[in-house]
Every structure is written in C-alpha cells, then in structure tokens.
Length: 363
Image 1: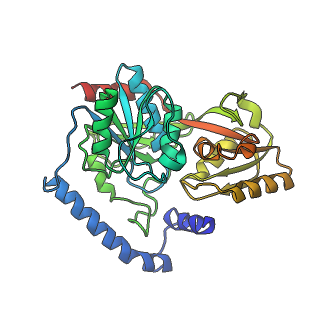
Image 2 (image 1 turned 90 degrees about the horizontal axis):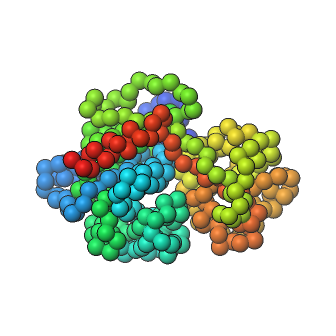
C-alpha cells in the first residue's frame, strides 16, 4: 500500500511534465473524463438552482481545496475557529469524519468541555481539531446540514466552520476559503484519478478567500495566483508549535531535535512537508516512513517501527499530532515517541485575515 501511495504521488506531482502518451495517463484519462463530466453536471445543477442548497440560520464558513491531499485544511480550520472564538463568536466545527466507523450525522466529538469520541469512531482529523481547539464543539457526519442544525440547537453556535467542504455544495456557505499549495497548486493539472484535481482550476471563481500555504519564513510576496482581483489572497506558513514527549503534559524545548538521529513516520496527505519541517529544525533523519493518509496503525506496525528504530540506533522516534491521536491506544509505544505539533501562521498578518472573516460574517 505504501509503495502504491508513493508511486501515485510521483505521477500526480511529477518533477517534469508527463507526456500524454505516458502509460499512466493513457490508462487513467478515460476515468478522469468521466469524473470531470459528473463534476461539471453537478456544479451546473447547483449553479442553476436545480439542486437546492440548504441555508442554516447562522453564517457558515467552508475551508477546502480543489486537490486531493494536504494543503493545510485542518490547521486552517483550527486557526479560523480559535480566531473567531477569540473575537466573541461561538463557533462549532463540522467535519465529514473520514476514517471513523460512525456513519450517522450529528456525532459529538467534543462538546466544548471534553473529547467524547476517539479516532476509531470519529476519524483522526476531528479528534485532532477537538484537541487543538478547546472550548469549541466539534461534530461529524456526512450530512452537514443535520450536524449544523444540531450544533446550533444544542450548543448555541452562531457560526459554523466546515472542514474540507468546498465540494460539499448542498449546505449554503457565506464564506468559501480555498487553500492552494504554493509550490504545486494543481499538481499535473489533471482531474482525478489521472491527477490530484477534484475540480478544474476554474472552480476557484467560487472562492471568497484564497490562502496560499507552504510559504517559507521571510519569503517575499510572489505573483498573485490566477484568480479574479476581487478575491483576496492571503499567505500562510507551517509553524512548529510544540514538541511533546509521550504525553501531552511534557513539553520539550524547541531545539531538542538539533543534531539528533531521528526515526520519523507519519500517515498524512503530504509527508514531504513533515520531513521538510524536521530538517529545518535540525534533525538528522536516518529513516522516514510514510503511510497512506488517515492510516490506522496496527500492533504489528508499531512493533516493527520500534524494532527498526532500535536497530538503527535512533535517538528519537517522532510523528505528527494527527498520527498521535491514533497511537494513544498503544500506550507502551506511545510513551516512547515524540509528537510534533504544527500549525499554520498567516504571513505576515493573521489579524487581517480574521478581520476579513469578521467583516463578511457581520455584514
């Protein structure tokens, strides 16, 4: 599975252009044409009002992208929800709950006072959001209209933040925030499954705000993405927040990775970003193991990782916070690992971003 995941990524994000006669494209393009036709028809039905949207009695913010994979949607959801709460709003976060066993809607991952569901039931990202956004209710379910109504009635939410919902058009939203990876915004430029695009780049016309993610510290502003001038564009970079040893109660100093022989592993959509962050922090990576996104670890996995790290004389075992919420059930292994918490930081000014959100919500 890991080999297939890596191979697919090399086709979706190649170092150079793929020739139209490449065997992968020849095989996949018929499926991409079919997928594109379905996406175009669905969007046309919503644009013309044939498929009707549900409007809830409070503002809705959608955070999403037009590619499959990681552009920072979850940390942007956390940043937005926490920022709105600090400005006096009562936000609730709605997630699809991908990877969780619950298939109903309105599942309460957090009621704002504590986490009520684990990653096996609710999915890894909702639990991560609930951990990183204390005091904010987090709900899951495929029908976000149902989850949204429940959040309003049960928790008094006055703004709903949807994680990964740009394509979820059934629920009307007041703000569409779309994230683009600044280095590879459209991959190879082809629709799924021949490429990573969920929708053609023209779908960005539905956006109210664009956020370019993956900006380097101190990077000068570049040319604005090809979107209408009326759409504001913000920039954000990945920022290490905390290094946690085996428990959320033991915080390590920022320089602890400097020069250390690190065994790193993760199951996120963009593992290369995790690796780059570790290298920027001075870690000497002796092994980097990438599992598929949303991977749920088994006992055999953690045993193999621990065994190999010992054989390689690794000084530290490190993973992401998203992986960490799924490793809590392996307590012996969990105590041996270090977790890196990473968030998004607006570059240069988070206040302008939040003021833009507040202006739209209060109009």
